[in-house]
Image (tube, rainbow over all chains, first blue to last red; front, side, top):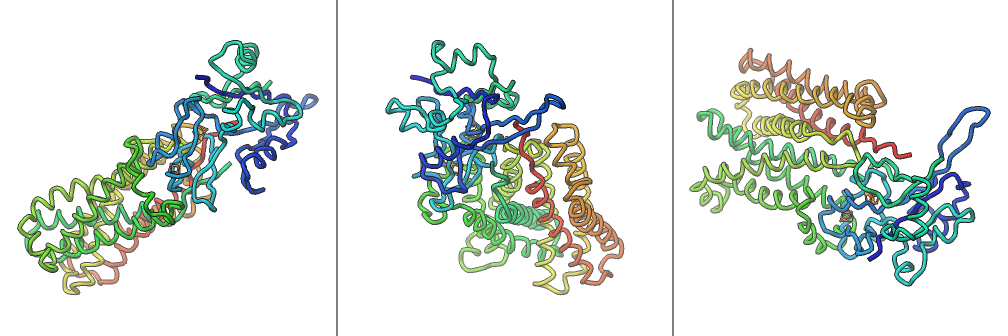
Length: 180
Length: 294
Ligand code: SF4
Ligand code: SF4
């Protein structure tokens, strides 16, 4: 079984929000709902001051706190290592939203359940690639199997030393960032 | 990115579950330890315990979304024993019936009460265990939340238990004053209980808030909001002064003057304890800050 992950080269991100819009279309989200966020941060100082854009989405943590606290078992990890929510059993208690240290979950008030990035699992199972990955004009994201050392994502991580955000939080994320 | 997902309904739940289980503990303590003069307080405590926890649980259910509109989904809520909500579901389903039966027994309500009186000691022992479990688990519920480092401390359940006992005693005393106006004199005996439990609560609260300043950046930010930041007027005003210091002083006088204190001040002190208990929970929830991730 593959173990999917994404490497993000934030030095290439221009903050265009294409990934967010592609994700909203892919997942039929309202304009105010999203599974990915572009945060920015001021880096450096004059004369080399710049703004860093950091695309954020669920990290599909291997040691996922959201899954640990979910009373119904609605939050589960698929065989491909993707953290998913079963819409049929979620009660909307929002405990998982509190537990996620990355705050990557949203509540869908229409359906009364919690949702988040699903790594476009249906597309991926059909041999495709997540919408945010394919749509990015500067190709910030690299998607693939983290267990296959020859996959583009593994090679990128090995070459650049990309790291998850806040690995000290201990959730073992599967989204890696090259930030400089 | 989402800010706090929980709001007033969960805060009210945390407060009422605490006060209800505390009232049960107060009632049992009176019934077991004290002679006849405390029967009113035991009755009052048992009467308010169950209903408070029931109303609190209703708040919890109201806060559900799909689980509220499609209540049958709630059966899934015991699926994960690593989740404190699953434990809460189990604990509440046992504690609520016990608390209601206990109220029936002490107040001789219907045949259920008469029957239950025969087993009163066993109800008191098992009920107390589940009352402590209810009060404590509400603290564990938020203490295990990774998303808010301020809450990740074993002091949290201790604080919640201490606050549950003082608010529970306050709720029981208010109801005792309502069901028996002449009881005010005997209530002075329990002012000592307030003096003790408010001190314990103040100590744990102080440890919790000030030790958070060195625990982690995020915990320090939250504690800073309470001590000198945006929420500090509420923290010092509602929790410390109105919720702890004033009722503490009133309770000392109440005990010393033994029954001479005006009823309004006695009940007033108890109402302040309740306001403090609700405020501390609200402030703990609202001061929660997630880790800085970028
Ligand atoms: S990022 Fe948050 S929602 Fe995603 S798996 Fe980790 S804890 Fe769960
Ligand atoms: S909101 Fe749904 S997915 Fe989240 S913890 Fe509750 S039941 Fe689980």
